Image 1 (tube, one colour):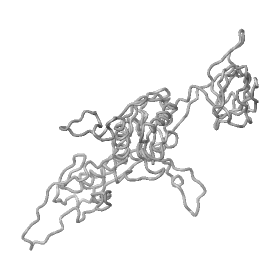
Image 2 (image 1 turned 135 degrees about the vertical axis):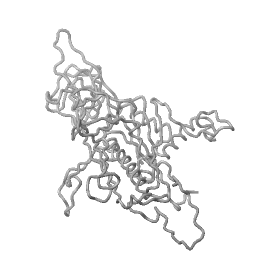
Image 3 (image 1 turned 180 degrees about the vertical axis):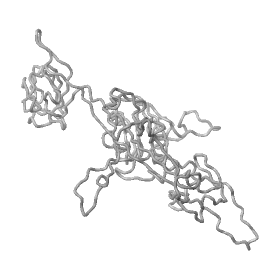
Image 4 (image 1 turned 135 degrees about the horizontal axis):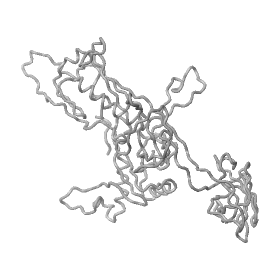
Length: 479
C-alpha cells in the first residue's frame, strides 16, 4: 500500500495579486430563488503555514555596522601529523623524517615552528606494524624535515620507504633536556582560523490599488499573525509579511556565496559578474567545513557511534539538538525502541509504562550515548512547498545537528574575546539606521500620503548574515 499521488497537495499561494473568482462570489443569477448557504469563516486547512522558528530556537540576533563580519576560531592545542615519510631502515637509531601533510607550511620562523629540538614524539606506523618513542635532535626549517633519535634499544620498529611517503603518524607528547643546557629554542604561536561572512539585502513588497481596497469580500479571512476582517487585501498583505519573515530565516539557511567571475561563455555571466556576492548559509558552511553524514539516515546505535566518534575528534560539546525531518525522526524512534526487550512487538515505546487506558507513546524526545542528543521535528524539512520531499544523493537533507550553548571567539569589531551562540544572526544597524526588519507604506491609499500613485505599497527590507561558529561541531545528515 502507498499514499496515492492524487488528490495531491496544493503548492500554490492561496492569495493572488488580483481579485479572482477564487476570492469572491461570481454567481449573480438573481432568477435562482435558492441562495447558497455559505460558511462565513475561512477554513484554515493547512494549519500554521509558516516554517520559520529554527533560528529563534538556537540562535540570537545582534547588530553589525559593516559590510563584512570577521571572527577567529581557536585552532588545535597539540600538533599531530599523519603523513610522515622516512627512508630509515628497521633498527636505525637515528632517522630523518619528512612531514607531507597537505597544507602544512615549511617550518620557518615566519610560519611558526611546529616541531622543535628537544621535543619527544611518538611515531606510529600507519599500517599498525609498530611504534617508537623518539626525541627530535634537529629540524630542517626549509624542507619540512626533522631528525630524531630512537629511545628503544631495537631502533626504528618499521622501515620507511621514501621521505615523500606517508608511512607514519607523529605527535608530540613532551620534551627532555640534559642538565645544564639552554631552554627550548623557538616558540609556537597560537594557531587560529579566520572566517568571514557578508550580509545580504532581502526585500519584498505588496501592492493593492485604492479601488480594490474598497471591495468588501464575503468571507471573513484570518492569518497566522492574527489578521482578520472582510477586506481581502488585508489577508494578502499579512501573508506577504509572513512569507517575508520565513525568507529571513530560509535565506540564512540556504544562502551560498557567488562564485568569482570566470571567462564568460557564449555571452553568459554568473551572479557575481552581475553584482551579486551571496552569503554563507548554514547548510553551505556545515557542508564545507563541518561534518556530513551521507547514504541514508543513521538507523542503529552503531551508526550513531560513528557520529559520536567524529564528535570526539571535534569540540566534544556535551549537549546537541538534532533538527530532523519526519522519516529521520521515525528512524530514531525505532532505533531507541529496539533497545527495549519488548521493542520488537511495538508495545512499550516511550516511558515503558503504558497501559490500556492511555495513548501509546511511540516517540522519544532524545537519548544519551556519550553525549546528550535531543531531537525535534523541523518543519522546513517537512513542508512540501520547501525542502519537504526533495531527495537524492547530495541534494536531500534529512537533519542538522546543532551544538547547544555558546562559544568564545575573538570578535574583530569589538577587539576582544566574546561569548557567542554557535548560530546567530548579525543585522546591519547604526544609531540612525536599523535594518533588522524595516517596513514602510508608500502611495496615496490606505493612509499613505507619499505620492500620487492610486495604490498602497507595503515594503519590507532586511540586511543580515548568519554566523556559524565552530562549524566542526555541526553535523549535516544528507541522503
